[in-house]
Image (cartoon, rainbow, N blue to C red; front, side, top):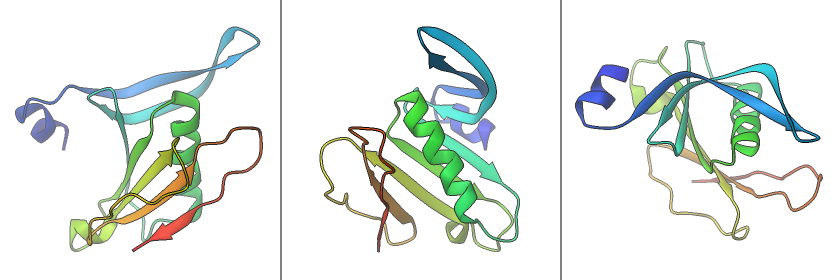
Length: 124
Protein backbone atom coordinates (compact mmCIF):
# COMPACT_ATOMS: atom_id res chain seq x y z
CA UNK A 1 0.00 0.00 0.00
CA UNK A 2 2.77 2.42 0.94
CA UNK A 3 4.57 1.74 -2.33
CA UNK A 4 1.45 2.46 -4.40
CA UNK A 5 0.71 5.71 -2.55
CA UNK A 6 4.27 6.95 -3.02
CA UNK A 7 4.25 5.83 -6.68
CA UNK A 8 1.21 8.05 -7.23
CA UNK A 9 3.14 11.03 -5.86
CA UNK A 10 1.52 11.24 -2.44
CA UNK A 11 3.47 12.25 0.64
CA UNK A 12 3.15 9.46 3.22
CA UNK A 13 4.49 9.23 6.77
CA UNK A 14 4.56 5.79 8.42
CA UNK A 15 4.37 4.89 12.12
CA UNK A 16 4.12 8.59 12.93
CA UNK A 17 4.42 9.21 16.65
CA UNK A 18 1.71 11.42 18.10
CA UNK A 19 2.09 13.16 21.43
CA UNK A 20 -0.74 14.44 23.61
CA UNK A 21 -0.64 18.02 24.91
CA UNK A 22 -1.33 18.32 28.65
CA UNK A 23 -0.92 21.65 30.45
CA UNK A 24 1.37 22.87 27.68
CA UNK A 25 3.63 19.81 27.69
CA UNK A 26 3.76 17.15 25.00
CA UNK A 27 3.38 13.68 26.49
CA UNK A 28 4.41 10.56 24.58
CA UNK A 29 1.58 8.11 25.19
CA UNK A 30 2.73 5.55 22.65
CA UNK A 31 0.19 6.59 20.00
CA UNK A 32 1.41 5.75 16.51
CA UNK A 33 -0.46 6.46 13.29
CA UNK A 34 -0.06 3.63 10.76
CA UNK A 35 -0.05 6.07 7.85
CA UNK A 36 -0.53 9.80 7.53
CA UNK A 37 -1.22 10.65 3.88
CA UNK A 38 -0.63 14.18 2.62
CA UNK A 39 -0.65 15.43 6.23
CA UNK A 40 -4.44 15.18 6.23
CA UNK A 41 -5.75 11.58 6.14
CA UNK A 42 -5.03 9.05 8.89
CA UNK A 43 -5.00 5.45 7.67
CA UNK A 44 -5.22 2.60 10.18
CA UNK A 45 -4.68 -0.91 8.79
CA UNK A 46 -5.95 -4.08 10.44
CA UNK A 47 -5.83 -7.81 9.75
CA UNK A 48 -8.88 -9.05 11.66
CA UNK A 49 -11.93 -11.19 10.97
CA UNK A 50 -14.08 -8.04 11.05
CA UNK A 51 -13.66 -4.46 12.18
CA UNK A 52 -15.15 -3.81 15.60
CA UNK A 53 -16.28 -0.61 17.35
CA UNK A 54 -12.98 -0.44 19.25
CA UNK A 55 -11.11 0.02 15.96
CA UNK A 56 -13.36 2.96 15.05
CA UNK A 57 -12.95 4.38 18.57
CA UNK A 58 -9.16 4.25 18.26
CA UNK A 59 -9.24 6.08 14.93
CA UNK A 60 -11.70 8.62 16.31
CA UNK A 61 -9.32 9.28 19.21
CA UNK A 62 -6.44 9.82 16.78
CA UNK A 63 -8.58 12.24 14.74
CA UNK A 64 -9.55 14.28 17.81
CA UNK A 65 -6.04 14.43 19.25
CA UNK A 66 -4.31 15.22 15.96
CA UNK A 67 -6.76 17.81 14.65
CA UNK A 68 -7.26 15.90 11.40
CA UNK A 69 -10.78 15.34 10.13
CA UNK A 70 -10.64 12.28 7.84
CA UNK A 71 -9.55 8.76 8.65
CA UNK A 72 -9.70 5.38 6.95
CA UNK A 73 -9.92 2.00 8.63
CA UNK A 74 -8.75 -0.73 6.30
CA UNK A 75 -9.14 -4.42 7.10
CA UNK A 76 -7.01 -6.35 4.62
CA UNK A 77 -8.33 -9.73 5.81
CA UNK A 78 -11.29 -9.67 3.39
CA UNK A 79 -11.95 -11.18 -0.03
CA UNK A 80 -12.71 -7.80 -1.63
CA UNK A 81 -10.89 -4.76 -0.24
CA UNK A 82 -14.01 -2.59 -0.53
CA UNK A 83 -15.65 -4.85 2.08
CA UNK A 84 -12.95 -3.90 4.59
CA UNK A 85 -13.09 -0.11 4.26
CA UNK A 86 -14.58 2.33 6.74
CA UNK A 87 -14.25 6.09 6.49
CA UNK A 88 -14.59 8.28 9.57
CA UNK A 89 -15.10 12.02 9.27
CA UNK A 90 -14.82 14.39 12.21
CA UNK A 91 -17.16 17.18 11.12
CA UNK A 92 -16.30 20.57 12.60
CA UNK A 93 -18.98 22.54 10.71
CA UNK A 94 -22.25 20.91 11.68
CA UNK A 95 -24.01 17.59 12.08
CA UNK A 96 -24.69 17.43 8.35
CA UNK A 97 -23.61 14.31 6.56
CA UNK A 98 -21.08 14.36 3.78
CA UNK A 99 -21.82 12.38 0.60
CA UNK A 100 -20.87 8.73 1.03
CA UNK A 101 -19.38 6.43 -1.55
CA UNK A 102 -21.50 3.30 -1.94
CA UNK A 103 -18.58 0.98 -1.17
CA UNK A 104 -17.53 2.76 2.01
CA UNK A 105 -19.41 3.05 5.29
CA UNK A 106 -19.03 6.63 6.43
CA UNK A 107 -19.37 7.86 9.98
CA UNK A 108 -19.75 11.61 10.42
CA UNK A 109 -18.88 12.66 13.94
CA UNK A 110 -19.65 16.19 15.15
CA UNK A 111 -16.58 18.04 16.35
CA UNK A 112 -16.84 18.28 20.15
CA UNK A 113 -17.32 21.82 21.42
CA UNK A 114 -16.91 20.68 25.00
CA UNK A 115 -15.82 17.51 26.76
CA UNK A 116 -19.07 15.74 25.94
CA UNK A 117 -18.98 12.41 24.15
CA UNK A 118 -19.52 12.90 20.41
CA UNK A 119 -22.33 10.96 18.80
CA UNK A 120 -21.92 8.98 15.60
CA UNK A 121 -24.40 8.54 12.83
CA UNK A 122 -24.13 5.89 10.14
CA UNK A 123 -24.51 7.20 6.61
CA UNK A 124 -25.36 4.78 3.79
